[in-house]
Length: 488
Image 1: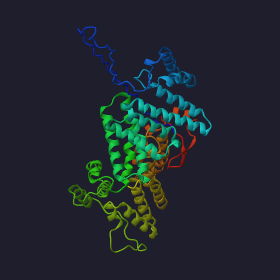
Image 2: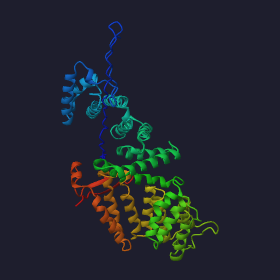
Image 3: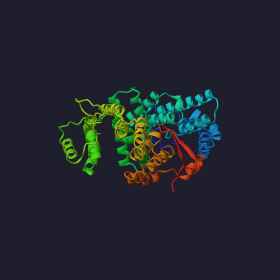
Image 4: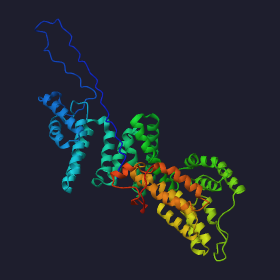
C-alpha cells in the first residue's frame, strides 16, 4: 500500500558553552602553596551522554568516514555506506555528540538489508537490530523520546507490520503522544487513529481511554494546523484528510460522545436547511442518539418545525402487514435516536409485508441508518441493494451506495493517494446508475462533478502498470470490480 509518509526533521540539540573558572592567584609561600589542579570543564548541555569522536584517538579517521558515509547515504548506496557507518558506530555512535545521524543512517542501512533479505530469519534479525538502534537512540537523546517512540511505532506499523502485535504498536504510539502531548508530530496521528479504533472495537481499551486519546488527537491536529508552516503544515493537512473522518466511527457507539458534541457538530446543518424534512428528522434523531433531552429548547424547535411542515412518510398499514397496536412505531424509534431498535423494527416490517413499495422504503431507511449512524457499511450496502431490487428504476439507493464508497477513502487508505482515490471509481459507477432516475439526477451529477477532482493521476496508474479503461477490483470492504479512470 502506498502511503503518504510524513518526513519529519530530527530535533537539533543546542550546545551551551561553559567557561571554567580560573583559579585565583595566591601570595602564599612555596611551602604553603597548595597543589595546583587543572580545572575540569563543566559538562556541556545538549551533548549526548553516549560516546562521541571528540576524545577518540582516531578522530580524524572517524570524521572522514562520517563525511564519506553521508555522501553514500545521500545516493542511497547503502551497501557502500555500511562499512563506513560501522566504523563510526562502533566507536562514536553519537558522532560529535550533537546529532543522531549515525542512528538514523543505521536505520536506513538496515531497512535496506531487510528489503533485500529473502530468508525470514535474516529479515527478523535485521528488524531486531533496527529496534536496538531505536532503543540506543532513546538513551543517547532523551530529549527526543517522544519523537523516537513515534518513529519506532511508525516503522512497525508500516514497514514491519508482522514484527509486532497491534498492542505493542499502540503502546509505542501512546508513549509518543504521552511524552509530547499537544506538540506531538503529525506522522504519529494517522496510524495511531487507526489503532485506537481497532483497540476499542476489540475491547482492548476502555471507553475512558478511547475518549482521552480521541480528544488528544484532535488537540494535536488543531495545534499543528494553527501553528505550523511549510512542510510541517502540509503534513498536518494530510492528517486532517484522514483522522477526523475515521474518528467519526466512535459516533456509532451510543454514549461515546455527549450531547454538546452532537450539537456543536450537527446543529449547523439544521440552521442551513430549516425547511428540509430529511435534515430535520436526521438532526433531531442524531441529537437524541447523543443523549440530548426531548425537553431541550433546540430539540423542541426542530420537532415543531418538522411537525408543521413535514408529512409522516412511514408506509401506511398494509392489510397483509398486521402491526402491533401498542408501543412505538419504527418512525417513533428513529426520531428518538434509538437506531438499533429502529432497524430491528423496520426489518420485522420488511419481512412481514408483501408490498414491494413498502419493502423498498424500509430497506432504504435501514441502509441510511446503518451507513450514516451505525457505521456498518457492508450491511448498509446490502439493504440499499434490496431497496433497488424492490423498486426498479429508483435512484436513491444507488446514490447512497455511491456516497458510501466515496466516503471510504480514509477507511481504505491514508485519506490521500492511490488507495483512497480508487474508491471514487466505484462511487461514480453508482452515481451514473442513480442519474437514470430524474428525481436524483441533479444530486448524482453534483457528486460526480465534485469527486472528479479526486480521481488518480495517469502517472500514478503508470507506476502500477494500470491503464485507462482497465478492469480493476477495488479492495477494502468494497470488493467490487470497476473501470479505471484518470483525472483529466
